Image 1 (cartoon, rainbow, N blue to C red):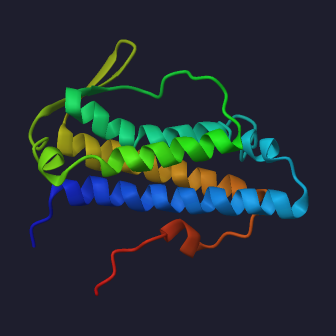
Image 2: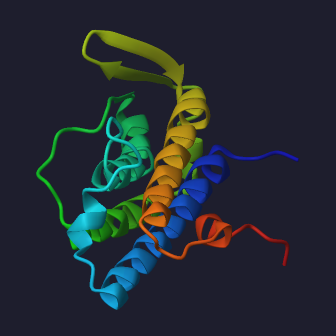
Length: 173
């Protein structure tokens, strides 16, 4: 069975972004139900030296939509510094990333195959092909940060399950 770069990246990113949307929605509902200021969630982290929920959500957007944008020009880097966002701002960022990913056609993404891709962080340059970058860097990073966001909200008491993380699976039918 042949599988396209579009299926590996865009369809996978859409599942991750859908799950992140659902997890954030449940988190906000929990805050409302329990009378918790949503900013408490935005600033929460699993452990003191780990980035908070706000960074995790920014990173999900960066390693999905941002990864595809990077592939369009052949270079990417870490997420840029940005102004702080509140809970609604994080939800908006994921909605924006979801729309951005959906705007990439199969023809465009499949056309990235075999092209050079550079991940650049200061003086560090890591050369990839676009498929190597998407499959071994962007996709694992998107999952890592989505999982960490899920874990932060779960740690704060949000009633989440594995099904919330899996979101819309590619079932036969």
